[in-house]
Length: 88
Image (cartoon, rainbow, N blue to C red; front, side, top):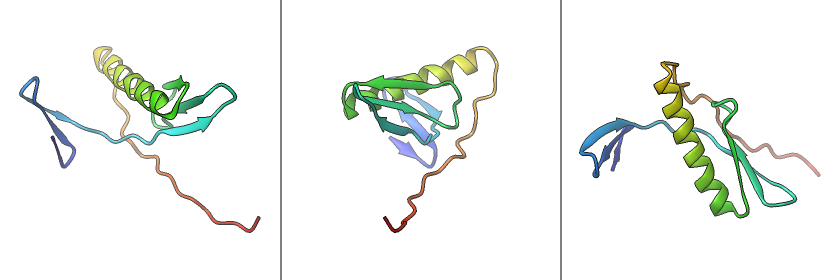
């Protein structure tokens, strides 16, 4: 259950902060790849869109947890996306 950047974990009974990171998904010759511009080095792949989205979520969770464990700052999400119309 999410409320204003906080998440109530039903299995833990604890409140956690939630951050929403932009993820870029690209089609490749063998499936899909994904990365988050706000988390350098955090990327994943998958054969389908569903798989790559599941894998990048796990990669981001692992990346953030690793940063916390080593005492590093977890980057704030700052990237955004936008579409630009051009004549083609």
